[in-house]
Every structure is written in structure tokens, then in C-alpha cells.
Image: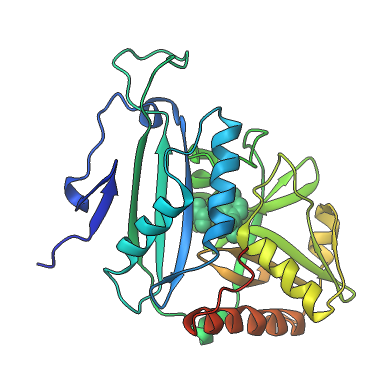
Length: 293
Ligand code: PDD
């Protein structure tokens, strides 16, 4: 049997299956915790500065300070990623409010956060699968109104994904009051008459790091884009639909609610943007940061 990978827990590295938190941890009892997923390509963590800034924002939004400096986090990511040299991975981190012996909704005045991180290998990118695209349904967005905080309270997202699986599709696009927000774990883009559109940042969706990169790449390449709300009708009539995330990269939705999107294959702008995104990964492997400042 292969040895479990080392995980980081409160300053130590130990085998993942031995990294444990007390059952009184507030992350477990109340979902009082935030997280990040940092992709690593070829063993190299990607857009780390952006992920750390978002972690700071999530922590500030729940009244916490980052227990680690950005340098300390970078060292953790590098140490974890080194275990799978050259491989694509997702580095997961979580900061919980901490464990407190009395279960009480009131946040204790003094409680030490619990901090952990681990890495998971991702299969190498399957270009043929990416070029086939994915399917999705729309579902009512039943989440709370602070989806900008990357909180671990993901039950609504998990149930939406389960519904998608039950309906034999890959994902769900969440719609709140007639407006399409994002995927269950991804941001949403559509292409309409050559214009790339993504919903504006706000409290109803996560400010995705991949979303950000796509906008930067669009700007650089002279692709016209807008940050504007997307009504359900616009979604249904879109020429292209994409879902973006650190794990999906840019996925083209080619079937929505059983009907084909555009020509039923990833569209021309997806091909262009995906190529620009893949070029960023190549630059990372060559030792260049790609738009990470
Ligand atoms: N999720 N919106 C939601 C609700 C998400 O959970 C995610 C990412 C995104 C895309 O963000 P980014 O581009 O920074 O990955 C948007 C991660 C991957 C997850 O929960 O596994």
C-alpha cells in the first residue's frame, strides 16, 4: 500500500490519515471556517498571490486574521506540492475559527484557529474531453447571500451537484430570481454576439481567481467583454456558455437543460480563450508567473 501524503496541520507535517481535529472544532459544528483551492500545474502552485488575497478577504469577512503570513503559506504549498513532483494537483487549505469546549453560537473571545492543508493529484488534462464540453441544468440558487466568502458551508452546492448527477449531467448553473449567478463550484461566462459576459462581482457569487484570469486574458487579447447580469433567457439563448474554476479551468457547456448550446460543441471563443489559458500554464512551467501580482 502506498504511504499517505503528508498534510499540514497547525505548523506540523504529518501523514494525511493522522491529521485530526477535535470534534468541538467550530468548522465542524457551525461551518465557521473558510477555505481555498489552489491549483498546481506540473507541481507548481498557480496564481498564489490571488488565492492568498482572497483568503485574507474571506477571513476579514468573518472577523478573523490570517494565522499565517503569505510567505508561510507559500512554503506550505511548496512543501505539499513537492510530494507529487511534476504533477497537476489541487492544494486544499482550510482555516477554522478553532475548537472550543462549549458548543455555543456565540464566537468565543479567545479561541485559537485550526489551520490545515493537503494536496490531491489531478489526472493530466484530457484535451479531447475538454473539446467535447460538458452538460448542465439550471437550478434555483438556494444559497445564502454572502457567496463572496469562500466558506466551507457548501451543503446547497453539494445538493445542487447531486441533483445534476441524478439528472445525468455534469453540473448545475444556479439561478437567483431569474438571474444566472454561477456554477455549483465555478463561475459563469456566456458569449452573446461576440461579447463575452460574466456576472459582476458582489455578495451573490464568488470572485473566482480563474474568472479574473479569463477577464485579464480577454482584455489583453482585445476580446470585448462585459461584467453584467445574465438573465435566464439570455443564458438559454447564449452562443457559448463556460464554467471556470481552479479545478475545471475553462469548461464549455454544450448542452443546457437538454438543449444544445450554439452548435452543440465548444465555440470559437472558447477555443481561443482555452488556448490562452493553456499558454499561461506553459509559462508557469517555464518559471514565469502568469498574471499573479
Ligand atoms: N471552487 N464559485 C464557486 C461557488 C466556487 O466554489 C468556485 C471554486 C468558483 C471558482 O473559483 P476559482 O476560479 O477561484 O477556483 C466559483 C473550488 C474549486 C472548490 O470548491 O473546489
